[in-house]
Image (cartoon, rainbow, N blue to C red; front, side, top):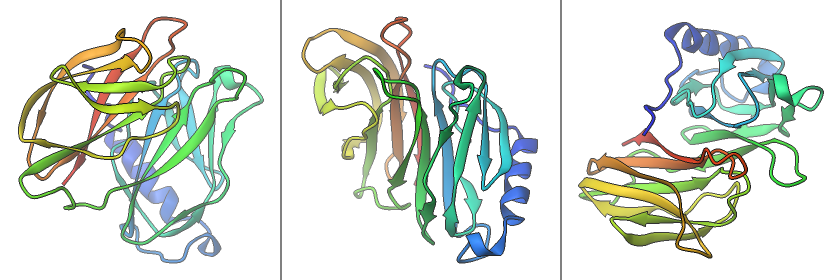
Length: 228
């Protein structure tokens, strides 16, 4: 399993400074920690990506399979634009995103699927400290282009079924401990990604992302901790 990508300290500082300088009209609150937002790069064909928020570049040279981790920002409405070398004149853009105070979000850059262009998906994450008592939670995002609907198999038992491209599963509650996880095609027993070994802590949640392209055969299962 790849180690989750972490933004370099300089990139994190840049993100916080630029967001704090955004025009007041774009925000409902100026506190930089009102909302927690992370960006995950799941674009296999995008090369290094550049992410801009309200026209201000906040992350340069984003790498495939990496995540910023959660960043504090002010609540309000923002527009996100993602550029990459292979995207050319067709950058990924989002409609204005309304980030609400006290909530957490994942902004996911998805690659091309069939005839559809690369796009940005925004998912509202669970609030901290909502995992069942003594349990850990995992959610699966299907971001592997051309793979179709997928199942998550936990210790050889199907735990999540038929997650389509660009979608995220409902939370799966598991006991604390180590698990072998893999992703299989929903209509066949073929393993697409994994297995990987993941140690889960009670009270914590984790996001799993199936990434890559079935056409190139480089599918992988990545794990990103959500915290508690």
